Image (cartoon, rainbow, N blue to C red; front, top):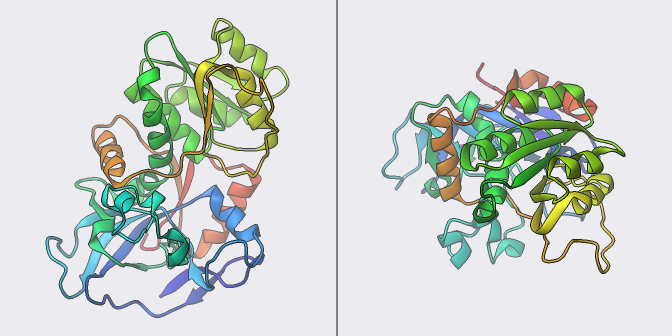
Length: 346
């Protein structure tokens, strides 16, 4: 089968022929319907050897959905042909965070040498993907795996962050989404589905601002030197109760501090690698700065329920596996609208 693999650090991934994996005891083979291309993959390609504890080569793609192709010995309760989403973060499955569904916080993560499929282990940018344990699968029901793939990260990550601040997002409050890409356009929809807050989106790209309005943003602000003042004006000078930064660059981190309200929350889910110099009054009184990471498998189930109810819908452009490099080039150039999804089986 064909697989898009990272073979050498700081070099472009390559499409290679590799054997179709055979599921062993307790494992599940998934026929990949869709694999989302995530901006964090671009950073993964840029980082030097030794920055992460991953062994090469491995197949990219940590945002996956498909159909069960084969069950390894001992796997019960699942059917061949069943549509499933693959929970992305793979922990030890035994520690307390893992047993509560938050494998993102696995206490043995440093010993595992990988964070999941597409992150140190073979992911979904291939015709088939081996999942090491059925606990990592969530039924899709009538959702198409090609449409549902982005829900496992692009929707789950902002959903997890928004839930952390949900008790604060009462009527009369505002939420700002910075960056209306794969995560940001889902964040706008999730805020609209779960909260009564005023939703303000900001981006450098006019087309992405138009998408933000299309999916439910109340206001769309062009990023730049006037953005902070415009956001403050829209919030009556109070600032935003939640600032969800889907970029994480120097400039967006600065904007975060300028527009968050007293007692509000800044949630940085973007991985652009920016830095923020902290000193007294960097943030307003009682405001918090948090780095939420992905989400729990229980939350993934909740995200899928929102999608089944028609409350959230990923905006995605599909690419066949042979054009996966084109998808990342489009992402790098900023010309994608929403998410790129690789569809190995058409």
